[in-house]
Length: 325
Ligand code: ATP
Image (cartoon, rainbow, N blue to C red; front, top):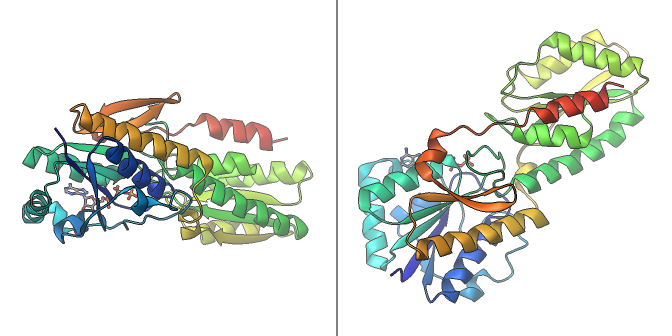
């Protein structure tokens, strides 16, 4: 019988984490389980930043970006000594299960901890990168995509007024999922992602086609981790090649992590939170909640960590079809 559940947010922050904390806290309460918020992820667990929560402690946060519990990356949790301290603090508070909201690093920590101390854990995938195997969507992805899209729509106004080629950098060091989504939705002529090397020749050809088709401004979406080099170098080469155009760079950066979570992210976060607590109550552990074809699913964390999330390359092809005429 679980009597006390601890919840923490870990790794990088993502919009919708607050809605998820709210969901975990209120669902626990509904089932006569006392929820505890752990601040600053695993680091807070080691530092004993553990506070009892109730339905009112999570009031008025469903609409807020960031996370009221703060996020952190903890080097100490990677050590046995750090995890022992974390376990001692959990036992002192009487907490008998954990909900971990975060990315795959956080899930790795969760599964190691759970196996070491036989404490039930449930993972909830939250990262703007949408790069976790075992779920179609992670909390934060939809909002980050919409924030980036809004910025690009604004950039389009200025691009069009001045014959400009805009290179826009989107977050995603190892995954092009966010750039792909934003690229298609913004009507970008080219999307450069870490998974596929974009040759200089392809960029030139796409721009030539675009110019020959009578377009006067162009958008190129570049994921942070693209394999073709620095966005500034690419922009310089393009400016040398297309002398009638100015090539401009805009790096959206951490703006993409901010803002009020979208309707979709709030719903996903709420669903995941309820489902996670119910799974703990029914005796499940070491699993991650996810969504597949709009249905809630469970996957063993081990399977999640051994799997590889695939980007939807179809989005690239659709983008090419729609921008090459
Ligand atoms: P994001 O995708 O946003 O980066 P993440 O959850 O993948 O989120 P990480 O920094 O990789 O972010 O992991 C978060 C924390 O999880 C780490 O700071 C560490 O405390 C813990 N963690 C990660 N890997 C391990 C591990 N092998 N052993 C123990 N703890 C780990």
